[in-house]
Image 1 (spheres, rainbow, N blue to C red):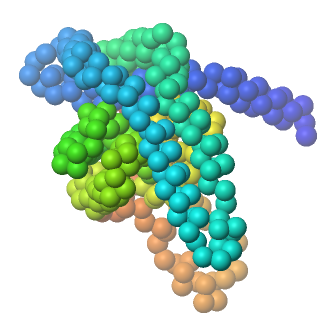
Image 2: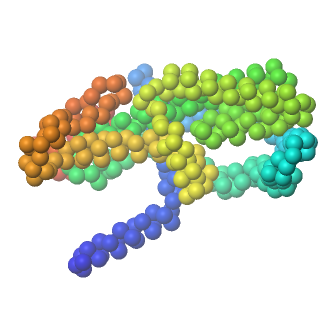
Image 3: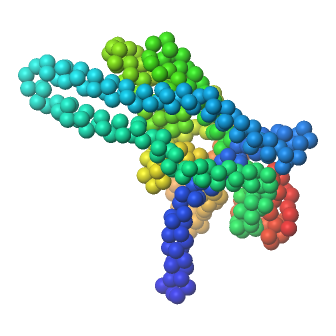
Length: 403
């Protein structure tokens, strides 16, 4: 390797190290971008009625803070009281389950009891862990935000991005080669659309699941309905893992009354999740926001392992962004345009030639139609004729530029 290549490699390693050192800051930056993207739709809606963008941004932030304050004043005190009682009842329910399983194992025929692992030791190991997690949840949450400093950082960042997003958008697009800026602006718009759709769909799912869970728990006569329903709604923000975790507490509390009630809670929660998967998700999120379950689960565990709880909550929006980049940039703009004349000439008289003559892989858009993007030659030509060096398309109008 030449000296320049070694210097480039060292610069790449240093950049990766620096980015990894500020990973939490980058995640908070992404949170601010997500919030600003969601509120930007509300600001644009206000702008249609003649409200200046700065005033609309302030109204949006103040309205969001008022809703959060009202929620905290009405719901949080009751939730904290019930959550404290919840941490006391869940271990009792787990202990009741342990006694029932021990009774069942003791009556197994022959040597089957020796094959079953020691359930008493297993529950003795799991119960302190579950109790510790429940007791330290709020303390860990408050410690994570470091007495509100991180929240204020995200809030101020959201306000700055929301009041005047154009300089930040243009600055980002200037990092892209001039011939690709118009295409990059289109990809950014698609990322914004999918993020807003995911946020709205998730909020609606949380509301529906929380209300339905509260109604079902009230019908079954389970204690601490508000706390359990609120937990069920909030856990909807974590697909796959959240619904399973939200079932443990109400089932353990119902087990204190009777095993039949606990079984009813488990069955009810399973039915609620089936309702979400087959009704809410297809109707609310649509096909364009559907993610492969295995990919979602893998991303959740990966981001949680690297970035902790914040990575777990941000796994889905990060996957949405990565999916768009892979589909539009890697697959369409690189792989679909990649040809090898030597390979085509070598196989022109073989059965493989029929496949080589077929169109490249079509990537359907959100509307179900196949978009016709320009080839690399067209993009380069457009970059040389229509886009001056350093020009950046303006927001919402890829044809407009400013120098």
